[in-house]
Image 1 (cartoon, helix red, strand yellow):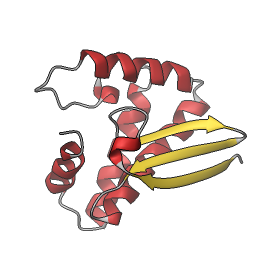
Image 2 (cartoon, helix red, strand yellow):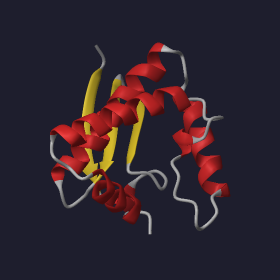
Image 3 (cartoon, one colour):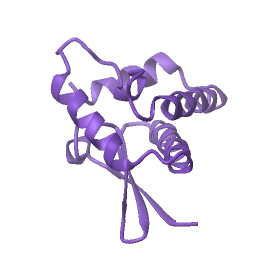
Length: 127
């Protein structure tokens, strides 16, 4: 298994406007998760990113295609649109993103986290 590292960083330090990111470098997958007031929220994002990365790797979806899609999606984003790029059916990782979101929701429920509050917190980082 490739070495993996998870780190929480200020939201403004992400490569682009996202709460969770992953990239491969020097034989390691680095996961960067935006800092949030509740560490459990960071764990939910980390789980989502890990599951998504496992699936895209297994299915041959390149990080480059994901980065290109996300960057273009964010550049074209309208001010009132708060959707995630992976929710777009044309995203190269749409299926993987949807599965990761289902697991993220299941873990949130097990942790007793109100999904609406969590989602509002995550979306609030971009405003």
